[in-house]
Length: 255
Image 1 (spheres, rainbow, N blue to C red):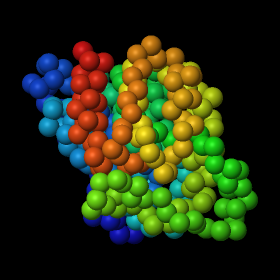
Image 2: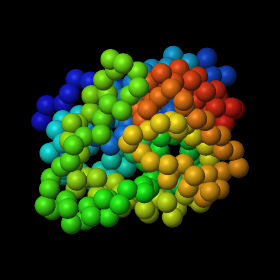
Image 3: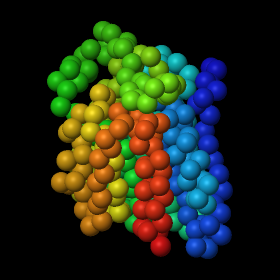
C-alpha cells in the first residue's frame, strides 16, 4: 500500500545543550484520519528548541480510509506507546502532545503511565462527544462503510491537512468506544497538563475539555483558548502560540 508523501513520520534526537543539559523528548500524535502532516510544524519547532521528537504515523493512516477501517484504537495506541518507549530509552524525561484523537491517545498514555509521562499537552482533544449519531455506530458501521470526511477544519486560507476525505465508520466506532473507557480513567492522570481548545471547532464539540478539567488528578493544569483557529489549530493562525507555550510548559514541567 502506497503511503502519502505528506504522511511521513518525523524523528529528531535531543540536543541537551539547548535544554539545560538534560535530554528531554516529546512524543506527538496526530488525529483521526489525519497524518503527521498536521503535526510536523509543531514537531519541527520543538526539535529546533532542542527537544528530541518522535512523531509516528498511526496504522491505517496516510494510505486509504478503506485500509484504516481495518485498524482500531489498540493499533493506534500501540504505535504511540512504541514511540514513547523508544523516547524513554534514549532520554531523561518524555512529554506527550496530541491533536484531536491524538490528544486522547496521549491522555491514555498518561493515565497508564502516571509515573513516566513528564507532561502532557493536548490541542482540541477528543475523548467524548455529545453527538447522538455516534450511538448508532455499532450497527451503522456494518451497513455503511464511511461518512464524509472531517479534515481541513482550518480558518487560515490555503492550508491543507492532507487527511482522508471519508470517515471510516468501523474505525470511528473503535475510537468512541475507547474514549468512553478513557473518560472513566482520567483520574489516573497526574502529569502537568496544558490544554489548548479552539473557540470555534467544527469537528470536536465542547464535551471533552470540561471533562478533563473535572476528572484529572493533575495539580498543574493550564487551559488556553485559541480564538483565531478552528479544529486543526496546529496548522492554523494560533500555531505559533501553541509551539511557543508548549515548549515553555514542557521546559518548566521537566526542569
